[in-house]
Length: 255
Image (tube, rainbow, N blue to C red; front, side, top):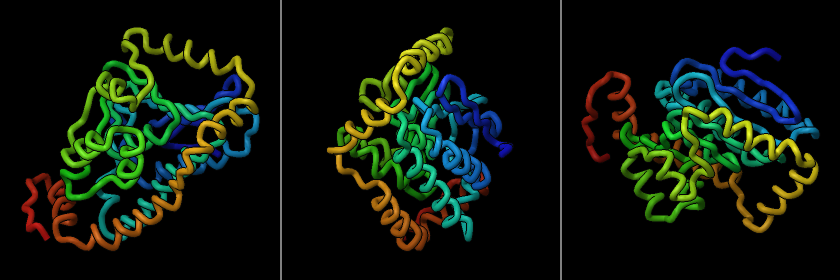
């Protein structure tokens, strides 16, 4: 099928989903649906050696459209976004996020859902959701598994971004390459994967994950319900989102 907000490419048994929704690649519901369709299309391709999530524009993604957090769109957005992350995490071939610029909010969550992250020295990572009165469900599950718990708390509670170098030092990403020769380094990294067997890669990924016994699908379903029933029932969550849309400072009632 054709796509408007992403591109789907295949070359040498490597599939690429490329975000292309403006300079910041804001994740709206139509874009999420396109990514989900692409992931479904790729799922049955047994020849794949890796799935790459890449981007055009300045940012990998600056996050989910704040307007899609509000009203009747909230549950639709969460369903689409969480299905997207489930599909990435359960994808049989290794998954790699390539981030030349910012990966924030939902953009960061998509990146950390991948098995590996390759970043330029211009990239940054963060979960700023708390500043608009909400929390990031996917990062709330994955950060404590990927990072020291105290750092996971800091990144989610304060909402401040970190540089690619700090993310690498924390073990959140794999490599930081200078932007000047970024493409060459990415090509060299992927060439190593292209030399390998697709079936062995899939079995190896399964072996790596087998003993972790994670159940992300059930965990995110539970947290999605909590988000909708508890968080979105508060005054402050709605105030934070409305304040962002109205370009003003939120006035918290702490209720």
